[in-house]
Amino acid sequence: MRYLYGGEKEDAMRFILVASEIAKKSTCLRAKCSSLIVKDEDIIGSGVNSPPKNLESQRRCLESKDALDRKVTDKTCCVHAEQRAIMDALRNNPDELENSRLYFIRLDKDNKISFAGKPYCTICSKMALDVGIKEFVLYHKDGVAVYNTKAYNLLSYKYFFPSQFRRRE
Ligand SMILES: [Zn+2]
Ligand SMILES: [Zn+2]
Image (tube, rainbow, N blue to C red; front, side, top):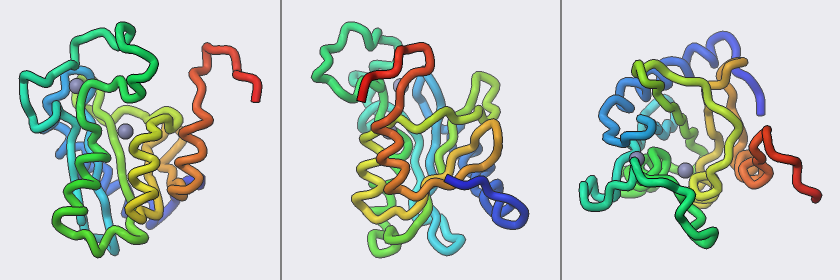
């Protein structure tokens, strides 16, 4: 992972701001998120999180995750913004995905961009890697960070919540 500076950071911030506008369309009741996939300065895919097919009958945002079995590995309520952006790019610009860059942001309750924590979504990290996305960009407290997607996937599997005891390797 490396932080972006100067012109590279300015370019990234433009897309992060576009993503923050798009995120307002999310209907998730837990957190409004969005994702953009960019290739050579062009947006080739975008998405927000919301229930599958935007069906109210499938909405789980306010349900407890604790009741779910450990076999239910994706406990998040909605289709992830990154999944939506990847599906959008696969539909509309499948040939542009190789070596593209994915941006992900989450809004806080006031619709301001919130700082991202460490990566942990192994579904999105695997999908991004599988379709050829080269880099993942997150807006951290310490700056705008770009991760190689292979490293991002490995990091996601190493995630642990800071208050937990570290698992023995
Ligand atoms: Zn939701
Ligand atoms: Zn995800």
